[in-house]
Image (cartoon, rainbow, N blue to C red):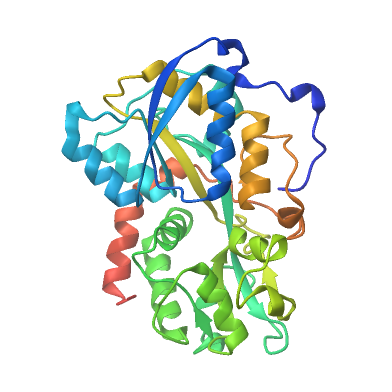
Length: 338
């Protein structure tokens, strides 16, 4: 179960403490666009003396850039969101396998690439949300979203969205391609509108009355608890939530992760940074700063995240899910999921 746990003060030892005298630089290609990540970078720089040079952009753009740069790429690390992009980066040959006892020990095995080319550092649960007043029997599982009783009620993002690609790939992995295609067909039939906008827009769709059921990642809703989110926070109490599939595989988890670039000029510094991301300090920043779930055991959840409640997370090996992402995209195309 994922739940708030008591932080053990004795565990507050930075992975990078032994390298406080280190120096040099680190070239970070990042698609994370959160202001709160600034603390991650500044603390690492202070602890190690290593200067972080950042190139920021969308995940797919950074992957394409690293491919084009080839062996001349200055990138040391790719930091991006979701298993689908991490898998895409590995398959394109822009990452390398690394040896790190720290990462292998701290990051759960199901959140690591089988060849140690990428590691997960924070998670978001993919949750079913619903209008409390109008939906007496909300979907309890992802597969339930395809039931005819929910026709015309569902808001969900497009087939190009990485969160949805990985969700469908996980359904393929758990239930097979035929069940996954039947599910996708049913969800398309149940859409209240054509897919549009981001996860927050799916939640706002419930408030506006455009739909009565939506699918979104946990941190978008948790953020509206921590601070004011226009068009969501003031009416948040009308929205109920279900962590799906609690009597089966558990809630699907989207991942934020990173890997060392294939031609990293500062490989040792890159590994130090990844190990730092698995430290208690960094893991707390992921939760407190961006309402995400830590991947390392024993790290206390932010109040906004803990408020969502305890739940069973799907512990499927995400590297296995990644193999089915091309199948998921094929299904999306076949069922005309826009």
